[in-house]
Each structure stands twice: as C-alpha cells, then as structure tokens.
Image: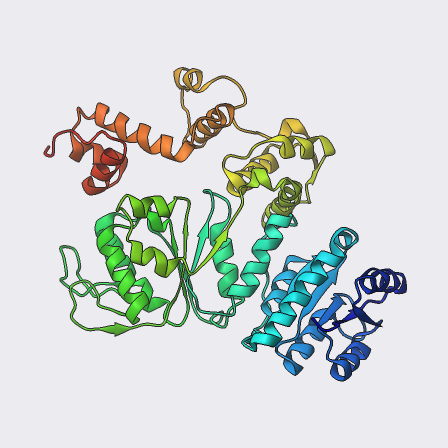
Length: 475
C-alpha cells in the first residue's frame, strides 16, 4: 500500500505534536492545522486520505468543516474528535457522513486503531469507487440521553440510517426507549417535515388492528358507520412506527408485506388500490427469529423489516447513563411543574446506580416522578428514592393489600423479579395472567378473554404458547 496522508486539525498544539509523533511512527505522512479554514485549504491542495478534526474549531466548527470537505469530495474520510460533545453532535456528524465520532479522552488508548481503521476504509473506497455522499437535513432537538459507549453506537446508527428510507428494526427490552430512537430516525431524515405516527400492535384488539392500519369503508363491518382513513394513509411520505410488531396477527402481516413490496393496499371492505410512500420503523422485545421458526411470524416479512437493526441495551448495562438520565428526568419534571430544580445527593445517585432497573429507562423516569413528589427538600436523599419492593414479599403484599393500587401492584412485581433472577417478567406475567384467568372463569375461554381484555383468538394463541390449550368455547 502506498504511503497515506492524515490531516490533523486541532487548536491545541500539544495534542497536534503528540498525535503527529504517534502516527508518523507508523510510516504515515501527517499534516497539521490549527484552524478550520486553513484545514480546508490544505485538504483542497493535498487531498489527504484521512482528516481527524476537533469539533470546536475557529472560525467555524468541525462539523461545518466536515460538511465542506464532503461537498468538495464525497469520498473523503473524516473523523470528528471532541472533548465535550452532545448527542446531537454525534448524530449530526454521523448523518453528514463522518467515518466516526471519537471522544478525545479515548485517543491515548486507541489513536492508532481508529486511524488505521479509517485509512483501510479509505483505501478500499478508492479502489471500489462506490461510496455515496450522505445528504444533510436540518438539525432537530434530540431527546435521547446517554453517554455510555453502547449508546454512542446507537447515536451513530441513527445518524447513518436517517439518510435512507430503509426499514429499521429496533430491538430491546420493554421500557428501554425504542420509540425515542424511532422518532430520532424520523427527525433526522428527509421526511422530518411529514407525519410520524406510532401504533402499538399489542394494545389494539386483533379484529381492529387491520382497520387501524389500513382504514375501512363505510359498512365494511358492524359499527363501521363512516369511512375511516388508516395510519398508512395518514403517514404518507412520513414515518410509521410499529411497536411490538411481534404481536401482529398473521393476516395483517400479509398486508404489511404487500405494502413493503408494492407500496399499495386497500381499505377494509374496499376495492380501491391506494398508493402510499411510508417509511416503516418497527420495534420488538421478542426474539423474532424464534417467532419465525415457530411459524407465528412470517419469514418473508421478517427479512423485509430487518434491513437495518438497532439494538437498545438495557439500562442495567449502561451504568454510566443512570445518573445522567436521573438528572435529566428531574430537570424535565421540575420544568413541567414549574418547580425549583431538584438535585441528587451522592448517596441517592449511588442507590440508583446499584439498582438493576428491570423496567429500564421507563422505570427510572417513573421513579424520578415519584421521588419529586416525595421529596421534602431540594436535594433527593436515598429515603426519597422508592425502588422495587420496599418491604415484604409478593404474597405478603397480596395478603395485606387492603386497597392496593395498580401502581403498587406493578412495584411489587418489579421487586419480585429483581429479587429472583429466574423470573422473566413479561413472559411470566403472560403465562400467569392467562392461566389464572382460565382458573377464575372455570376454563371458559370467552369469559377469560373478556376478563383479560383480549380476543378469544389471542387467548387461544397464548394458551397454545404456554402448553395449556383447553377450556370451553362458549358462554
């Protein structure tokens, strides 16, 4: 391989000297500039194989330098470096085509690794000549909070996929923030001026889901007194987020597949073919590969949806983000309630960081909401932080509930799951609620389905899934 050239751009001369020494030791030619305008001139003259630019430059930022370089040379390899960055910076830089976004404190440990990876990619791109520029769109406010390495990878993926229309599948445990990621993909996309609509496939009865998605004509079924426009029509040229896609019944899956393949559908009870241009982003906390193997999810639809996958890590594996998220939620809550800002004590922060958070980010937000109500001062102490099951076991709580609220019952369940690692809460709840409803109704499927608030077909699927398909079919 011919000798390659790196252009370093940073206001700190000490950093430039150190980095130049490190990189030249590998036989690489290194150029250095301290300002963005000088760097752009050098790039135009030298066409280096890699540019490593600090975010905070003068007279314009590293991201603006990235944009100018990419406009001049769409194949350019640029890494943005920053000691102080926001999540918006990461997403915007990746969306504009940065090869990587690196925190400055990481460079003493991996400067050569980062540079070598970019130089190798640069050589491959020049040989293949297939690299396409990434278009930019207006920057919007980002509401995803996280500084952990795992979340930085998520931000980078959002930046990369937002420039395309490819379907995206977001996986992760319940409460980990999958809808926020979907909204961010839409916000940073060229569709951002159009509608973003979200629908929870598990929350809508099976017999109404098709109408909710595709609409219906007047008289299509009992109760259809007028025409209804479905979510696919409402989100034309926008983004449709299908949450809990694993709960979608097979007949509806077939119509979704047709939309993805042909870009068209018909309303329930209608003959008119309707064209639509919708980007699909879906989410699931299920193992869809297992659902495909079990014939409960269409294999062809799975591959259509799983073009790009973004996995959201559970909060328990993002300990660096717990305090940051807690402080963010406190600011959000106090701002909404027009109250003085609450602060976390070090002891309270350690309590939060030591908890496993089975309910993920959603549980943390709810905990901060309760803490803001319980607080008696402007600093939260450990006694103000209600976590899981405060005292007693689940059976004890059931015997002494008196007037237990739904919120208290949820806390009991979270606490029991946190205390017993063998409990997988959502599958356990589905199984226990289903079987208990059958017991309570004398194995009458119609009454049990009504008690659970689901259709009989859904109940039968759950009974079959848990090896307990039995019971009367009639009242």
